[in-house]
Image (tube, rainbow, N blue to C red; front, side, top):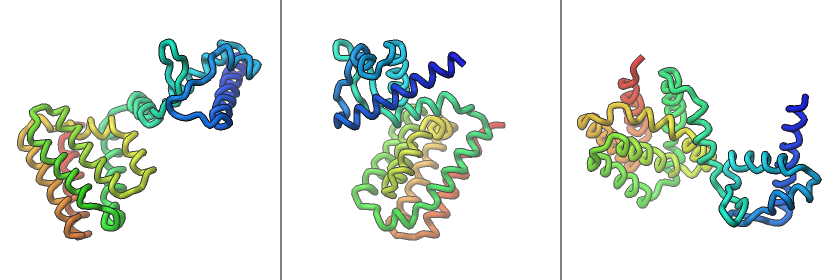
Length: 225
């Protein structure tokens, strides 16, 4: 019961700090009042305020800076990404579930992309794709592979979808890392990406779905039971 009361007190202070941020119109880079000041404002202990700060830091809302104090940040997505990566068991089933999520999202982007995709976005994806063959590092190749797909999802213009995809980066990138040490694999990935881009240029729904399906299915062959 004592632990529950303490957790509740910390939650209350977190809510009060959030209210203070809204009331004062504070934004990224602004400094929050000190622990002593907040403890007095909220009639709370410094330990409780300190725990509330830790909660805000865990969610990427604030960070401690030497000689400055607690500063508001905008690292929520990165914090959630780290948390997801730490908490999720990286298993064969997890990989398959993630690939299933990608099939449900990426293969159904055509209508949004057909309306929103610009020549500039296509050129950026082409440049990222070309860079995959210029790297000799498997880790870097997987980063570029993820960036290609992130740009593709981002071009659809759905912010929630883009943020969700970004939070899955650690797991998706580990999936993409499989087989990247083989030159033939890199050449195949790049060729499949080109087919996807060509289908988008032609606004060819059937070709887009076909090449995306083939591309996502190919990634599973490297996942060992």
